[in-house]
Length: 85
Image (cartoon, rainbow, N blue to C red; front, side):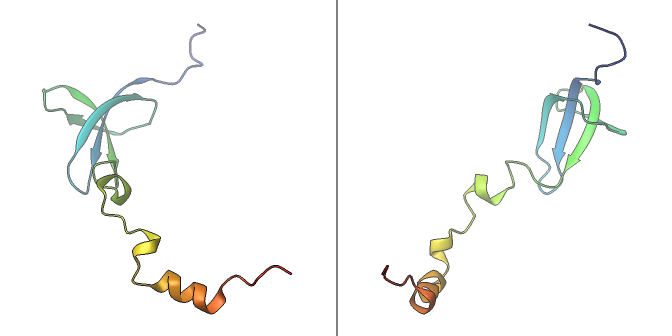
């Protein structure tokens, strides 16, 4: 491999700011801070607003379009499909 053309691919600590969930994975993301893992390692730190631990889709708290109190049915009654001619 040629020197100086590849990104800095290393282990990075990602932290979900909404619930404090931490995970380590390899990444090329640029970071300015360092953080400690649970096992004591000092790694570059990247802060996330949402991760799979807090996103409504992955936690099962996301509302389905069909569970919106009849709004979908009301829409179809008002603007329903017309029969094909």
